[in-house]
Length: 373
Image 1 (cartoon, one colour):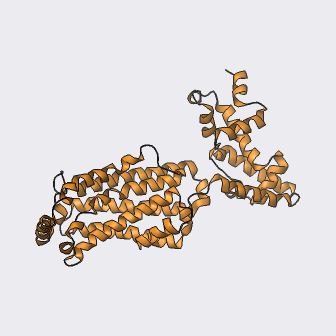
Image 2 (cartoon, helix red, strand yellow):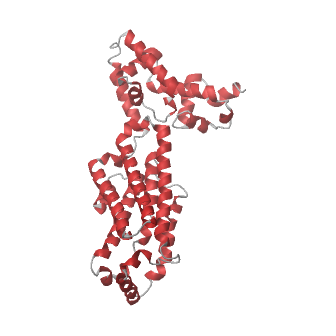
Image 3 (spheres, helix red, strand yellow):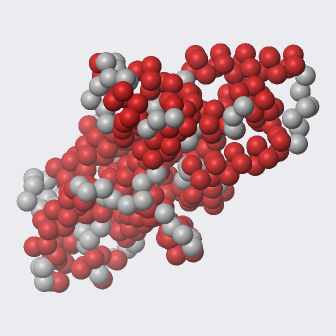
């Protein structure tokens, strides 16, 4: 199932994104671990194929970083690896190098070792896997997994705090990321307790079961909700929605009474002043309508009629006003133009300069030079 899912994600997907590839690698890694571990239960398999023994061990270090990088890529809309991301894969590489002397043993030597292990099955989880002492790698892998889960949860929490309104348009993907993170957290904390209180528990089974659950859940979820493959909606998608909404509203400009317009206007201004939603990048008219409980086309009418602006200029005006109000705050003084754009919800430096000039008739540099405190 896992390998079929990987084929769908990468081979059959015409435009696999960076996050999709990471998810595929994560699922492929789990599939490889499960396959190699299950070979133990096939009678005589490793005795017939001794050169495969322990080939899957380095992959166990890959699961936590791959899922962490996947969640980070989706939330941050990353399109490639960052400069130092290769460090996440170093434990797996070092473990593979550490096991190389065993891999280079002759087939008869491996057979002697494997026969001894199977004659003492209680030693299977405790075998020395390289330079480190026996039983050290399972504990180390679990510890690294827990650390990654802490950072993965932190990613979700921070993203939610900054983008809680945005996520309403991406509820399916957000639910998927939370569920995946919950399962991976459950896996590594479960293994942690197994290693502490492992009396009577087969450690290999303890690894197989939670990883199998993650793989099964992921496969089924991707088949039922293929939308998660496309990530969070980007700004281009939201601009298309905005244009459609404003076109719809233009035909209904006289459909609201004055009382209704005033009611909507009060609700809109109260929401903006109390919540500052314009600080969220890509905050669309559809999101604002949902948050204010106003139909989208009605909201567009109010903005066009009462403020003489389209939605983009309306929201950018608030962003510019926010900058003007805070530019000389102590913690804002060191901000560059890029920093000001980021703090006030603009997507880029160029969109900030364009909006600022439209509001003040001056570029930010000229304006702040003339109004220096």
